[in-house]
Every structure is written in C-alpha cells, then in structure tokens.
Length: 401
Image 1 (cartoon, rainbow, N blue to C red):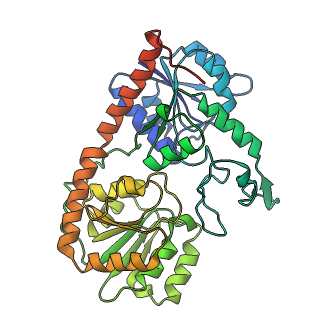
Image 2 (cartoon, rainbow, N blue to C red; image 1 turned 90 degrees about the vertical axis):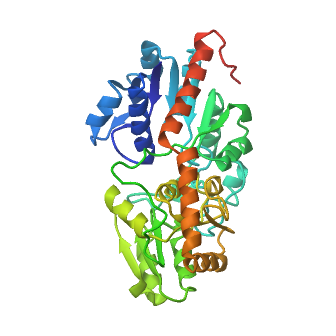
C-alpha cells in the first residue's frame, strides 16, 4: 500500500509529529510505502523521519500539493495537521481516497481548545455566529508589537466545509466524534481510534504494588486548562501524610507556585520540569494515585494511558475524552467536572485504601493492554487505510458530498 502523508512539518515538534513518526515507522515495518508531503522542515530528528519516509516532498506556492500528489499516485492520502484545507478540493478531484486524523479541537474551534480563557467555561456549541458573540473568539492574543489579532469566522467555516469532503475522519474519543457530528460531519465517515504512543521501552514489568503511600502525581503542561490550580485547592483539603509531585512546565506554573505557597503546602510538593521517559516512568512508579484534573475538554488525555501502563489508580474530572479510558470505580474515580470538593474527597478515599488503589491499578493495566496498545492501534489503522484504498482500487470509489 502506497500512503501519501500530508503533514505540515518534517521533524520533531509536538504531539502530532510524534504520532506521525511512530505510526509511519510501524507501518513501514509492515511493508507500507510512505511518502511525506510537507510545507516545512524543523531540522529536528530528521534521520529517524527519513527512515520512516524514504521519500519526502516539499510543497509550496511554486510547487502545488495537487501536482506532487498526482505524480506520486498513492493508494490513499492520509492527512494530519494541514493548514491549507482548500487543497482538499483539487485533491478530491484526483479520485484518491482521503482520510484525516483530527488530533484536537482546532478544526472546529477558533480558539482551538473550546474553552473560554476568562470565564473558564467549556463551549458546547458548534462553530457558528456564537463564536463571534458572546464568545468573542475572533479576537485573540497577538504577538510581537500587536497585542491583539483577529481570526476569520468565515475562513473557519470554509475550512470545516473543506474537511467534510474527506472520506474518513479519525478521532481519539467519543467526545470528539460528537463534536464532529455537531458540526455536521457525516457520522458514517467518523472512526474512533486513539493515537496512543508506543509502549515504553526497557521500562520493566508494571506492578500495581510498590508505590510510595500517599503520593499523588500530576503529569502534563501546566496551563490553565489542565486544572492544576484546582488540584492544588483539592490537596489543601487533605489531612495526614501525603505528598504531591508535579511533572511539567507551562505558563501557569508561576501562579501554581504562588498558590502552593499561599496555602502552606510547600513542604509537601515537589515540582519537576521536563523529565526524560525513564525519569517520568520512575515518578509513575512512586505514585499511589495519578490525578488528571483537566478543566478543558481533553480530546483524549494520553497521560491516562501512561498511568494505566504503569498500573496506577486514577482520579480525573468527567470531561471531554477522559471517560473513554477512566471507568469510574473500575480503574479509578471519575469526578464531576470542576468540583474541587469531590476531587478532594476522591483523593482522600483512595489514599486511605492502598489495597483498592492496587486493584484499580491492576485493572487499568488490563484495560491499557487490551484496548490501548500501540500494536492494536497500528493494526486498526492499517485495516482502515486498506479499506479506503481498496474502495478506490476496486472501482468502488467512496461517495463524496
């Protein structure tokens, strides 16, 4: 199967690029012919990218993507982050099936995260005039000497319409599937396939035992939407001997440090910056409970899978894609979104019951192994791409709107 990948950047950059590289490498090992079409190079870790993509093509104004894809003549076009959705119209005229991995909310939200930065309220609407008022999402923080910039609502609606032309949309969670349906994407075209990372190498067998009693762990970006301040306020309600490890960095870290000091929790908190995979694995093994206090609507929440692979009990807010992997009373506790009091009570109850934490951790490891393994993800993705390319090669071209 010849796969033409459309991805803005060649090289390491962020979560989408990590998924593209790991998935392409796995499919290459299974015999797929990968060709990467991109707009720019990052210069980071390109040797590994060249192994996964023996052929890469740089496109731009003087070299339109449709001409390059026509020359490649792939069986299927597999799109990740691509900033010029208007390319999908001429690409569709080539008669080559097209699918896309929708990594986040950027496709249907001008703010990209469906979360109001001032009110901290999650948006439940589709893209519409409400994005202009009352959301004011068209007015955004600028850069450089300009404090504000303006985003086009009409351009966003055109982008959504362009993406509706695609033959397959792949999302990470039931929540994201609902968001696409809300924005009038055909439900039959949508597949749920969480883009889980490869299983950790040389981490040793996971065990539900061996944790440090009373230790709570948060892993992720320390930004407002991740709800670290809500977790800190919940920790303030705990009694007894407990400790908190914060592994991450971000724009809200200074405010979280100030809150920790204000609440008199400094002696109980350790703050780490960026950790290597081995260092992060060690922190997971020390934790009795891993907290996922996200205030925004997580598209999925990959930290939950990492915790489950380490057989750790979870506590998280019932928001976004988190319920897809956090099963209440089974591998952790699901708390009403934003409820600090209930979050504190859930943490308190688990810390007092190590045996229950071990049982939940062991169940989480089972769920991760059965439902969220990287090998299963790659196999399912391969079958889906073969289904798309088969529809084209057999003459049974998928219908387009």
